[in-house]
Image 1 (cartoon, rainbow, N blue to C red):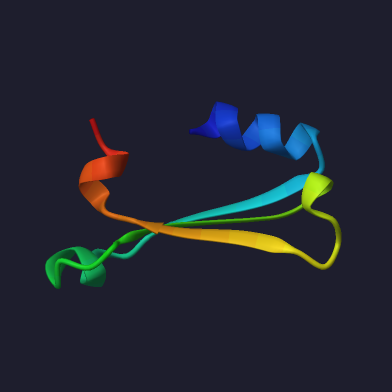
Image 2 (image 1 turned 180 degrees about the horizontal axis):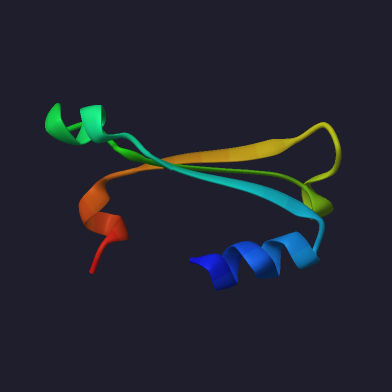
Length: 57
């Protein structure tokens, strides 16, 4: 994951990854990624909420 974050940063993208332990316990989508800047522009961002089973091998 650090390589991906570095690759995005080199392109001017700000990235936040979050894992919420409470959401895992409650069987909600626990992983969240937000990106902004770079090719998205200054007024846009992208957010995705994911199940932990999709994020871990």
